[in-house]
Image (cartoon, rainbow, N blue to C red; front, side):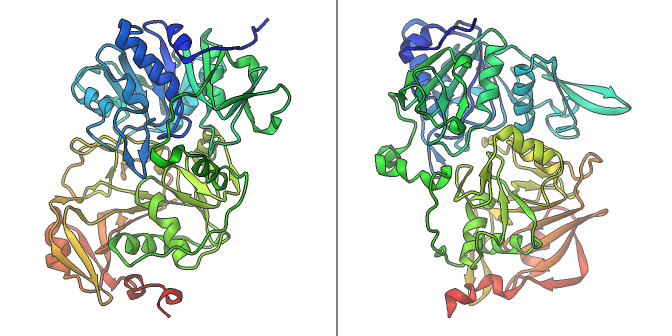
Length: 526
């Protein structure tokens, strides 16, 4: 018989976590962050030195953030005390290099691995099913391949999580399934039987599989909620985790939400993201900037009726706003993002306003790896002469691969977006581009710091690769990068070719980028 869940304090839950435990905690930024439980673990460790040597598995970084700027001392950074964590295995890390967890990784204070988000989702599902592990082709020929670093992030990390195996004359990566001793989860409400609903949440991120992975490993499942309601009062279609899987329920006491997100009005504003209500979407009021030029040009690569994946950074933050600025309607584009939303208007944080559907994250990656994406619009940090891309690590910045590798190996058409260089200044003047100062950091490099997308890999399903900057547009051909479009006002030699440290072929039919990209949409300028 499965014991009924109990209702305990976060301190009591923290006391039940043994040193050396393997812990899973799905969340994304402040959403689904079990902040009260994380704070209790930190408090216990500060007071007693226990628990020690935890291994933390998670699909996305958990920390509070305003927009895309992380807030120190929140989320997983609460666990970044020397000795508390032995190992972290995640698909993403903070975009703020000074965050405690990122600092600890760079200082070799713990082992750290970066593996694809879809692989982590599959691994948790495999553990929940009591299987031996995951066999996948995702990640071959990239930095997560053991022959190219195995996703190891520092010198302290010496053992590969994955091994290269042969099956039916094909290569795969095999990840052995670890046990999960503790699941730290966040839901909206619990009823008296321990059933956990997610009606106030914008996604669920594989929470059920994480819970079941712990339960079927003989571990504990702690779920933090806003409130407890009477048995039978929850909408069964909003219940993501049934009560018999839950060990204990904890009431939230420490908010994971930044600043004014903590008030009730802001919480109610989440309705448009959860699907509970639909909110009117006014046209976006933007100005012509290098970012809007890039986003508008990327959208020109999307054929009618295409399923369009938007990646983190400029695509997720700017593309859907630019689409509305140009007069798009909810039926103009069919957007999807890896956290779960389909349709609607994607926003910062992996959410979408007025979505048509919200799938569980593991199901999203089933769809992606099955070839469901027509066009993927993604960011780039570095591009080399082959057209290979790094988004996961550059200098002290270590955002991780997230779902990028799962997506790029399976999308049919990919549009990489980014500024031509970093640290410079470019202005739009009278419908043309003017380079005011050169960038301090080139985005086009002779050698990538990390190989996140391998353009030469035979594993890729991609049929076309486009690279969009505010100054120029490139495509990849067998010979490498080819310059196909140039922005008005840009000198091809001085502003483009001389700033790329390798030879780039210029297309014989080189043409100017559409001048309309450099002016407000007609509906805005009339």
